[in-house]
Image 1 (cartoon, rainbow, N blue to C red):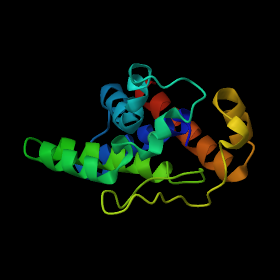
Image 2 (cartoon, protein in one colour):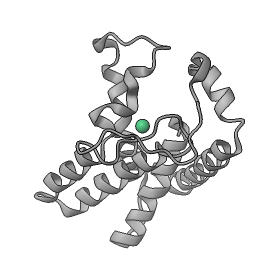
Image 3 (cartoon, rainbow, N blue to C red):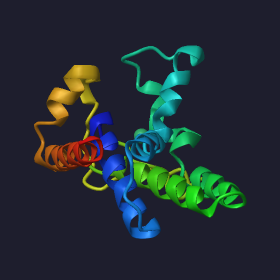
Length: 168
Ligand SMILES: [Zn+2]
């Protein structure tokens, strides 16, 4: 899933959590925090320059980093639950859903069984980064595929609607 899809999906999910679990209408602040939490696994990108990874390289084999393992977020959520069950729920659901989306129609997928097994699982995988496709080249190619475009558009549009309702 691209960053736009992740942001849209996180906004929708953050809104759903507040409504369904806490019976409250989310304000802009909680939605922005939700969008950040839903993108937390990708924050490893910030460390890429310090690790010597250049653009165009298979960005640190991104999905094979600990930041894309369910165990990390299960443990993080359990730790947060010691202080706040509400925030544990938000962090757990939003980060794990990020991993679900990164397991959708991509080339490598997520190590759902790590550390027991390093196999990466992906639904409808395809060679998304074949022939050195990165950056805009990747997006142009990826978003021509209905299995990518439909969920990306659905999440981006519904996330936009959630934001418009919150700010409107
Ligand atoms: Zn990711």
